[in-house]
Amino acid sequence: MVIAIDRDEAVARDVITRGMQGLMRRAHAVHRWDAEVLGAEGAEAALGPLRRIMAHIDAAIEAGHGSPSKIVDRFGQIIDDGMVDHIVLQTPTGDITMDEAKSTLDLFCSEVQPTLEAA
Amino acid sequence: MNTPTFGIFDHIEGIPGTSTQQLFRDRLDLVRMADQAGFTGFYLAEHHGTDLCMAPNQDLVIAAASQITTTIRMGPMVKLLPLHHPVQLIEDLCVLDNLTAGRLAFGVGRGVAPIEHYWLGSDWPTATDRFEDVLGIIARALRTGEISSEESKYYDFRTMPMATRPVQEHIPFWYPGRPATAGRFGLKLMFPGPIPKDAYDLYVES
Image (cartoon, rainbow over all chains, first blue to last red; front, side, top):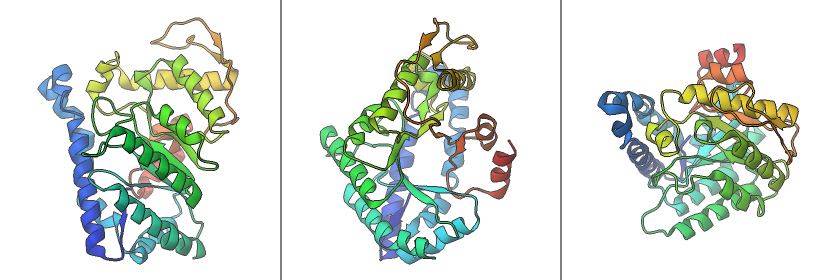
């Protein structure tokens, strides 16, 4: 999941929004030659999986950003469901900078993960 | 509650104003940092002809990262099986498992961008079938120690020894696609976001 953590939730929201928008822009561009090999109808069909992902972008932004304590709460819910043994974070992506990604990962390692492990 | 382990997924996207050399140096710094911080996985995407993925052959990045990390698992997420010759895939996989000292985690998939299949000499209508065909060749090779196309629809080559063996007896294979397909092939399921109960049950039942 794309993730952005900052003590200021507005900053985290800005970071993840740029990440998602940049990621979707690039993912969409991957398909820009599909019509040459599949025709217009086939190319449209090939966009189906990406469109299904894009339909859930707002939810992904909501779930993936926040202060360390908010992320702890959200991950706690996922973990409590008991269906995952490995969670994969996605950062940097899109228009998230390397410094922003490192800041997120620093907070994840120093505050989120220890709290989850202590629970 | 049991705390899961954590990993990082990376397309290695281009960044305007950042040279490709710097991009790769930054990514190697990132995986070294992730290793030291206790992350247990670092996974790389495969895309071609686009700045969504500046390192289309993940194996090269993993080979470099293997020499500056100690515990983190690494692997493609995913390797697009229909785009590559199975002998090359298997040989590279075995080399990587040795370079990483048994830390390879191998994600497999069909691919989602039709044009990439044509660029690499494959096609789109048969992509799903080719995916399963190549996965079968890989599975048989890891089980028997021989790389064979005997049961393949798409490849016909002489059976050859798998001279370089992997370190791990069972390399973890991941599949970030349909839960039923992951379950049917005995692959670990990677799901985009929190997994719904019905998708989880379908995976387990398959």
